[in-house]
Length: 309
Image 1: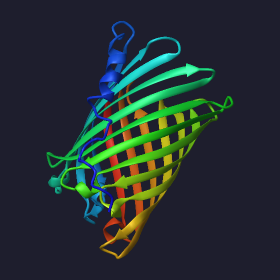
Image 2 (image 1 turned 45 degrees about the vertical axis):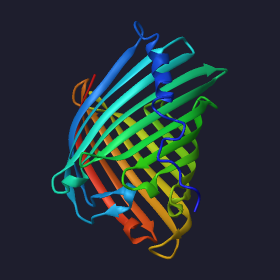
Image 3 (image 1 turned 120 degrees about the vertical axis):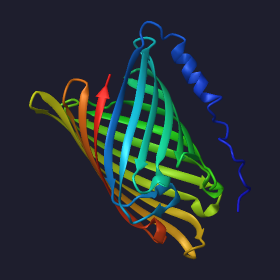
Image 4 (image 1 turned 45 degrees about the horizontal axis):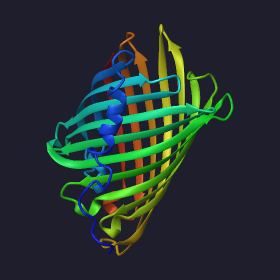
C-alpha cells in the first residue's frame, strides 16, 4: 500500500484556478460579451438503474424525470484571444429508486489563443454531484490543449488532462489521474456532415490500490445535419470502447480485475421553432468485467424539450 493521500483536491482547487479564469473574463466583459443558455425538461427509461462510480447495478428498470439549466458566456479579448465560462445544473429524479436521484452543479472556464494556424487552450472544469440530496462526488480537471487544421478537411486536437475526484463515504475510491487525448475531425460538408475519431490513454491512481488502473479508449462519432421540413435537424451516432487493466488484486475475486466497456449512442435533435428543440436519445452500454458487480448491460432511452436563448 502507498501512503494515504490527504482527502483534498491536491493543489488544484476552486480557490486557486477558477478565480483566475473568472477574473480574466470578467475584467473585460462589459461590452462584447455573448451570453447564451438553455433550459430543458424530459423523461428517460433506464433498463438497469445503478451507480456506475461504485460498480453497482440493480438489474431493475425505472423512469427518470430530467431537468437541466445551463448558461454560456463568451468573450473575445481580441482577434486571437477568447474566453468562455459555462455553468450547468441538472437533476434526475427516479420514480422508484428515489435514493439514486442525482443533482449536479458544474462550472467550467477556458481561454484560447490563436497563433500561426494553431490554437492553444487552457480549460478548467469543476462538478459537484449529490445522491439522494447528500454529497456524493466532487470532480475537477485542468487541461492544456493544442489544435488546428492539417488540411482544409482535417482538424486535429491534442490535450493533456489532470483530474481529481473525491467520493464521500468511499475514501478508497478517491483518486487522481493523468490522461493524454487526441482526436481528429474530417469535414465532408463543413458542420453539415463530419466524422470524429478519438483516442485517450488514462492512468488513474486511487487511494486503495485495488482501484488503480490504466485504460485505452477509442471512439468514433458521425454527425449529419439535414433539412426536415423547414428546419435543420441533427442526427448523431457514436460508439466508444474502453479497456481497463487494474494493477492490484481485487480481494472479492482473488485476482487482478479487467474491464471491457462498450457504449453505443444515438441523438436526434429537431427544432420546432428557432428556440424550442425536441430531442430524442439512446445510450446502450455493455460492460464486461471479471468483477460480477461491474458486469452488466444497460439501455437508456429518453426524450426532452429544450428552450435555447
